[in-house]
Image (cartoon, rainbow, N blue to C red; front, side):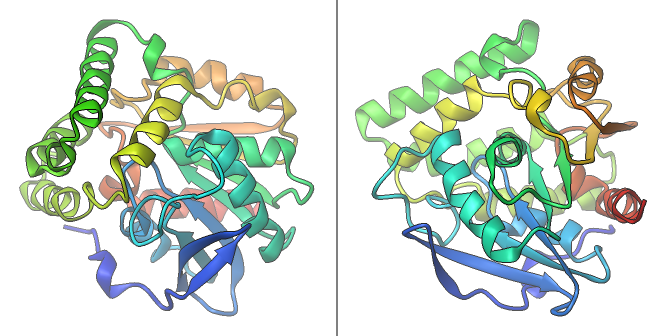
Length: 287
């Protein structure tokens, strides 16, 4: 197993006030390195991106818990949607400066793209890991049915006040099954443990539902034509959440983008292939 437990990697995790929102910000890697701002996906936290961040040698990787997830409290002055998170992330990017590489995974890829398209401070480069090429709510087949069922579960649990149901480990196990493709039993077991430990660390059912709706209806595609910085798309060839069929069209929508598909990998590139992803990112930024 090549993955590294996230708890062993955090260098600092102070609480910052970012655009008025208290935020737990973890800094990993080289304190004097060039900055990378990494945004995790729906129901994630900094733990998910730690295996990738730990392999970006020479970089200072800043991984916040998005407000409403991990140890960060929810927003009190805005909705937990793409616009709300983009405004917050833009403030973080401005603090880090224009030499920053902006990275986003899954829902974080949508937020990162929105930031990059509109921010007064543009990043040095944009890296999207398992980018959402098309809205999940519009997907067909098995993916569409799974999205509809998950949406019904979330909205029903929220309406009935069943917070515990949305934190239950069976949902974490379902996420592991749907998103993990590795056949390595030790790695699968570790990913399952990570999901069970962190999948339910959202602040409130209301904030989770807002973010879930934004994630299901959004994609990177509308923002891509407005992004001019060099962009790297790292996608899984067996990704059922963001299928590879849409990734080529997404890459073509950017002014300057490179798409790399990893065979036999799904929606958890940062867990299943962090060393590969780190090599691709280092090489891309160096070029």
